[in-house]
Image (cartoon, rainbow, N blue to C red; front, top):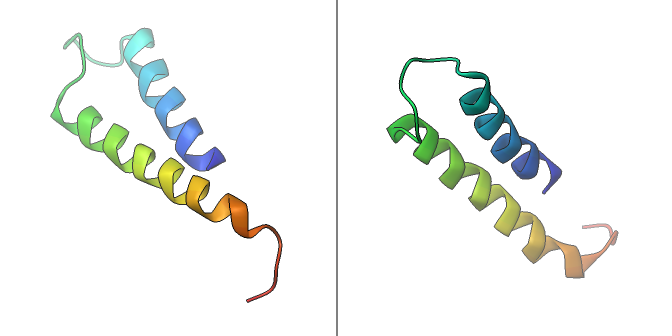
Length: 54
């Protein structure tokens, strides 16, 4: 879950620093945000399971 949050923050950080001449969210960033969102959702679904062994 933390990895997904860091991914979202990293994508917006790169956009704020102006790593490219294109301003706004592009197609690659949109895919990155979707992937980070999926990681966050997966982490949220695993939270109720706690620290039980498999």
